[in-house]
Amino acid sequence: MGNNTEILLTFVIGIAIFIIMVVFIISFVLIFQKRQEKHRLEKEALKIAYEREILKSQLEVQNQTLQEIAQELHDNIGQLLSVAKIYLNMLEDSVTDENDYIKQTNEIIGQSINDLRSLTKSFDGDFVQQFGLEESISNEISRIRKTKRFTIDLTIIGEKHTIGYEREIVLFRVIQEILNNTIKHSKAKNIKIVLSYIPNAFTLSIQDDGQGFDYGAIQERNISQSGAGLRNIQRRIKLIEGTCDIISEVNKGTKTDIQLNL
Image (tube, rainbow, N blue to C red):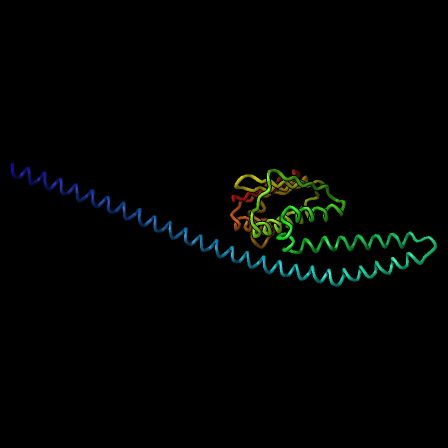
């Protein structure tokens, strides 16, 4: 009887020790995994913060450079065109014979001055801060419409709310890049831009009816090959806590959907 009790007691103690060891091992593994995940998240957060600082610095340098270019254009070429317009006005007033060529030249220079002003606005990041994203996009659209190569429409849905200056300037530069790509490569005739203000969110859609491209094939290319511009657009949107989906098929146009959760 005593031996049986000792055996039973030993067996119970053995099971208890085994259970304790299993619980200890499981706890150790869980704690280790939790610390690993915490370390990974901290590392990812540091990487994102670093990339945001890099993006912020890039934007500051880009804006400063573009503002200097805009100022040079305004101060030099703009002034020369204005002086030429004054001389043409004087010549137009003094010539009594047929002066259609003078009038046409005067009108062309006047249009060039207006186009130059519109262009310098698109260079200036402070324009976005002062007048907002919508007016900046409208100014860009007006500039494109003057080429008479595209029909471009802007639709705004919902009640406007702020998304923050840094996000707006990143979005504006991304929109400029997308439109520039469309103008250069798409062979489109129609471009549609839709801004949607949703409670706690903002979406942007740019769609064209151009020749499109094989998006999957471009994504598989090396960084040294074409496609870096698309990856750069998606990286910028990710850094402002947004998502960017690019949908394109050959001969079916291209659509870019951007969403920000606010």
